[in-house]
Amino acid sequence: MSVRDFTVSVTPQEAMDAIETHVVEGNISGTLVDRYVRRSGEHEVHVIILEKFYMRSNNRASLTVTIDNFDGKTIVHAVASGGSEGVFFRFDWGAGNNFANSVEAALRPYLI
Image (cartoon, rainbow, N blue to C red; front, top):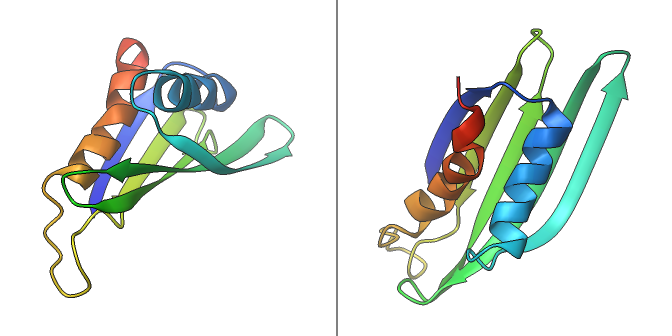
């Protein structure tokens, strides 16, 4: 499991769009599993779940990204999991880190 937290200078919607474009439409070849959005006044939360097959671990990795602006700034929380090889062996050959790092790459121009 790999966890990343970022603060970005764009809205939650713009951050979600950048991540989705980078992971799904870019060279990451991820798949969008689900998207969930809630808005209340000026505040919003976006949750996206992505997955990708990694040959090196012979397994699918999952990436769950939560983006909100409840504190007046846009916070991104990304968790990659499921990239380990086998049932008992939890070493993922870097698949989780790689998938979580794709969020940072997508948001690099907006990182605060």
